Length: 233
Image (cartoon, rainbow, N blue to C red; front, side):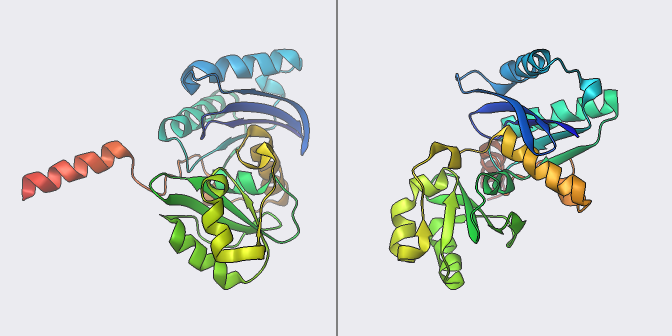
């Protein structure tokens, strides 16, 4: 099975081609340009360098968030367009699940994405299987949840860097960190591997539809609500 996978939920724009869960080629770019500028040229380069076309693709995959609101919309819109034209099956994978696929740690894996102001996007997994609801909460609230587990927990995602001291102070030796940048960013390879597992096991559901997973409102939405509330008062 040939899988074209893209990741646009972070500042890194990543595209990858996989044969089942084996990586054929990956291209990443974090040059500061918007994903709307980078994504299509990267896909074209990937297909050209692998002598493939979209007609050869059996499955499309992208990340659906949480993360950059704009980046998520760009990735999902691109996959939707390919689906409409080429009638290719597709799956949208949570960025938190994608991060969990960065490791084969035999135990609990906690994905944390920094959401600013002491908040994180959170997901808990065991052997890549979801163990909790996805949340956007204060880091102290999350540590209270993790303390209840009372087991070693392997942390992935940039939130685990930002709040490493907090996690260590709450969880002590149960908090496991690795000095490897690969564990801190979601990319197209881990999204593709997750999509392959879900698609091949036929366990896909509405959770993997091509719709964004935001978890919290955008700044623009919050500002609009504040203005509306102020006007009502």
